[in-house]
Length: 396
Ligand SMILES: [Zn+2]
Image (cartoon, rainbow, N blue to C red; front, side, top):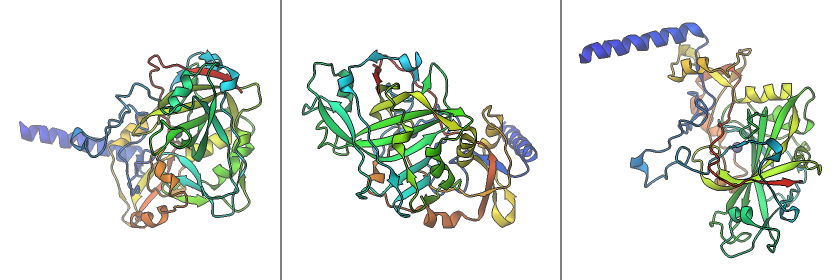
């Protein structure tokens, strides 16, 4: 019986291998962030849009806390059922204010990282030329955290907590949806609010994320050009924004007085999906060019990988799955790409290593693999149940 099962299993494996080999003789397609070149695989990808993010096993529970992704009750992203008019109208005096000066490159201080999960921009935090001022009203009590912001009333005395942005990154398609509709891209600017600013926060601070949803248009968005042009499709690669180029986050945000943003409490949208984040999602989409969306989807593309000179095609259980994927669009192959390390969204360690570039060194031992662009990719988690959470609606 065992032998029959084994033979049966081998037969199916062979069939899968054969189908896989015949269907794309370039090699096997690996989802973004899971290719064999990745020197620091994190054990998760976007193949099932977050529905398979179970986290470490129970045996390692004491060492590493379980991921909240499947068990959490305050998960992100969410759908805003009534679009921009979703949620409870909130008093104007409780509005968050944003002021990002241009992030100007001196050739060394602004890094664009392909971390295997997103294209992420980080900068030198001790650089005195970039002094953003993002102020979040809160109650000012000794136990105040970012979540108390949501229960404030117009009668409350307002204190202001300064939120410090330390990285931003993108997802495609959008993660938050408006009346069930996806945008082409979503920007997440991740901020830290220190315990000194908000006493109820843990010693590592509280997280606040500002999100902007992009809608595809014919014309390009000039404020995204420098980023998309400089970013590498090599997973694990860090590139530096060329000297004197600038990123103007302020101009990306729809702060024209006619827009609105929605505020709610949620989680990281990547493992470990930690909760207790304060989200600000602009419900007025901003434009992005079609070519720019395609460029981003190339950066997070699925890859055909093979082992360099030996030309031995590699197999992956994900190969066939990828090709069944309805979102998969084949595009021109032939460009040579490599892959590398991964990072976790909202990881505060980047606060202290804003000036890192470990990618190149770690890459060395994996360069016998060659990967080419196989298909446009995506790096988005699907929406999660709201479960009675409060959403507040602000005019800008
Ligand atoms: Zn994100």
